[in-house]
Image 1: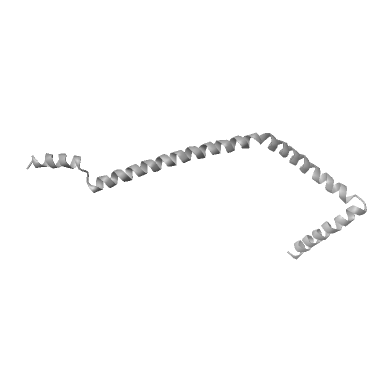
Image 2: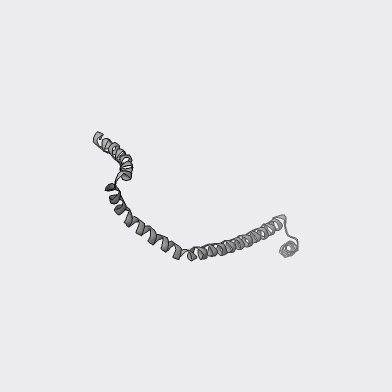
Length: 111
């Protein structure tokens, strides 16, 4: 009987079962899928690097706009004080803003 086992094992090695054939086919498909995933990840990485490079080119523009925003933010309170003391044109604007202020004050009084 021990002679039959090596023969069957040798025979099994040359002829693969349906399970082994299916297993090898699936392993091959999985390997190809991993290669596609790796290629797509590399492509994504290159695209992200390109986007970051373009974004870094705008850093000086962003800094300039930030400075502009800061300067304009500092000027806004000064402009508001100047408009309150101005003549007829400012009164029309002040009426609109005051009516909004009155309603807010009324809301606060109700609370």
